[in-house]
Length: 220
Image 1 (cartoon, rainbow, N blue to C red):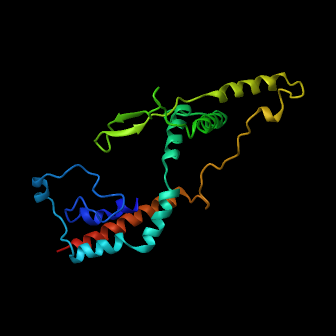
Image 2: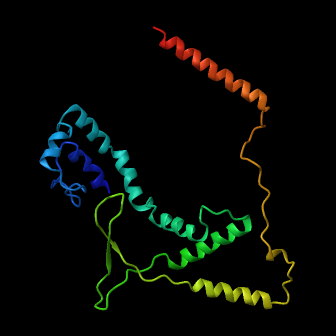
Image 3: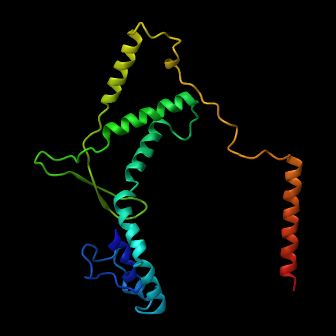
């Protein structure tokens, strides 16, 4: 990640391959034609602008923080969970509190059971891959094919429901059988709501003052 970040120093001066690195030796974009290279505006190597950019890119504190990001700041698993959550709670639909809580819990059970699946393999034991064409990158990329998902949590959940129903010590009206809706405030404001007429008057006055200032500045 750090070498890819530092590669910008070469890219901005129209150098797209180099050997002064351990892992990243070229830019990740497609080859730039000679015509496009002549049209683009590049920095001059060693110029004040290029030196200033180099100082920023190679800042020791920034590179130190980036090492931490490489290990702990990837959001891929979180994005996978958010996509899975849409399966149980689509954004276009409204759910009551109890229903939304249950759907979130189902999404968590599904995610936890299937997170960390191994890569699938062929009968010969070779890892399986697929080729996809993301709209963002506009180029073909290779992605791993993982083992099929499992839904064993569903059967365990159903078994627990049946066992709870058979338990004579648990009454239907037991508090544990219901989801308690929390008493939430109407809004998140931590100050008292002002009178509407006073707020409108202050808003109009502020707009009028701004208009007068603009007219004074623009007057020839």
